[in-house]
Image 1 (tube, rainbow, N blue to C red):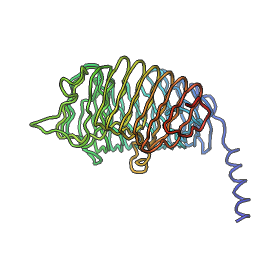
Image 2: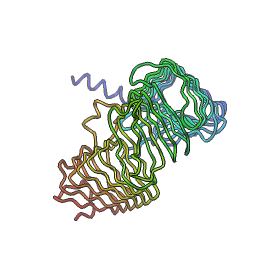
Image 3: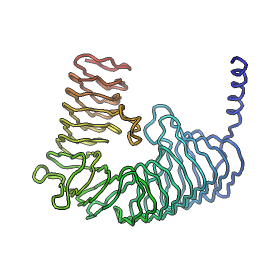
Length: 415
């Protein structure tokens, strides 16, 4: 064993030394060799760039210049984020329309990294295998084949022809005032359909498998969903009143379920659900939203500005639960967090509560299944938890009030 260990240490050291620093990726750059490269910090790509055969360790954001032509073939990308950095730090963003071609490549996420690629222009993919990554298409013409990815969003006048996709989420955003119908999208089994997506996008999908259809509804859009195998529905409310966001198989052709319930709020958006399996909801509250949400299952919940949200008798998975600005959140008689489900559901990659700015969150008789980070001038109040948070971390000038007292990992003003 000792002999094997002594052999192993030099091998690790030699591998680290063998990693080359990535040269500038400017017009005319070509990298074509079996070698390992590393990129620490931001990476800018401009002009015509061709990369073939390498393993690339990326530890920072990527920017693709407008008009760039990037070709990746037989490339193994390994993406990691600096410790404690926000979700999607080591991501890719197109400054304007660009051409990106990917052939026979992989992208592996290290630790908590979650690469998010914001794409514009022309995209061609033939065999790109990823695990915990996202493509978001904005005015993109795409030809996709043999793509495995966590989320594929098709929005904003994008036109996609695709074959043999394996997705956790197939998603789209509506415009501020659209009338749309989505029908016959099964869960976790292959289907072929031409779909009119949100915000004037189109998709021609062949042999596509998606676990969840994710729909982001904006403004006063009115959406009908029929025979959807499993869906997650997202709203961005700035309205007032009470919402009940249903969970499970809802509605029928003769009696669709309408959300929100008429007269319970002044929210302008509408969902008409007929034979739809609703998994969870996302709530991104902003401006002057003042809402009470009851008997609901919420995956992501964010609030900013002056938003005031009360949640009662519900489940909040806290895949992304964050408060900023002067937002206020009060949660009572509910479950917050879903770390217990992380091994069963790839869509629940994270579960944590984050407070920043001057936000204020209070929890009363809550069962926690996640941790909490309070930063900035935020205030966190926890009273009589059924199960305490897995951790509480306080930084900056954050204040934590707990009854009974719960240990806080980092020094904060505690009462």
